[in-house]
Image 1 (cartoon, rainbow, N blue to C red):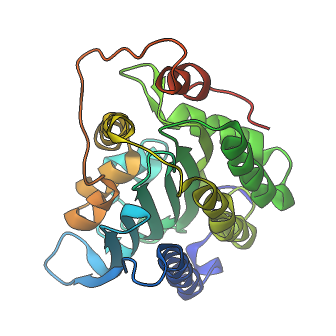
Image 2 (cartoon, helix red, strand yellow):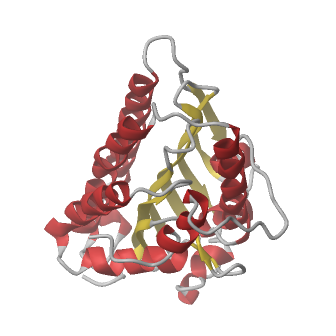
Length: 314
């Protein structure tokens, strides 16, 4: 089945139930990593009613000041709007101005220890159509890893988990989505990758509604296994102020990407979404340096030369 898949073919309540459950599983797992006496998620339920640009509801869950995570945000949203914003129609011009419904889970975790990588994951569904026309339903998402200090085994583990999540749906999907991730998570104004990548897909419905949703579920379900073993390996490593300074410098690059290039951020802001929830991906501390140059042979230089490049990690 091509892109003209009917939204009614996949009950929206089924998608919503999965996404709400996924958010709960992931945040519960992070609280276990924080341990007894560690930080806990604040749950902020919100809704948008008649008279607002969007209608709908969601749950923003945020953890700050933890032992392991300096800031971790995981949000669920389910919104409806009168017309798709430009960021969602650049590849679907026939849907410009169409009413839409969108729901998803998006997360970014910023660890305290600079040796634990930042991670991002997003899974979402959008349905849209003009009055009287068959609605179009598509999926997007993926996950990607952004280390401050690079470790080959971490990158390999993360990419293996991504490959294995997609394997039941076609052997061609991992290399295709891996290349898409490398292309998407690139700071084009600097000619620099944001991290070591992972997988990314958008405007996806080619497997039909049920199987495309199944693929989305497989990606969401794979996240904890892809990320938490890396956290466990790195969270107790010793570090000092120089590593923290470099972490904040690299976080500055993260902020640049989210504000300048990220379509999800643009979609949320253009459609009148909830600003606090849209910007939960921002780190608590970030910094910028003018033309910073790290010495050859240092781990900081190795990040740029060996990890922030497009590689076959498998």
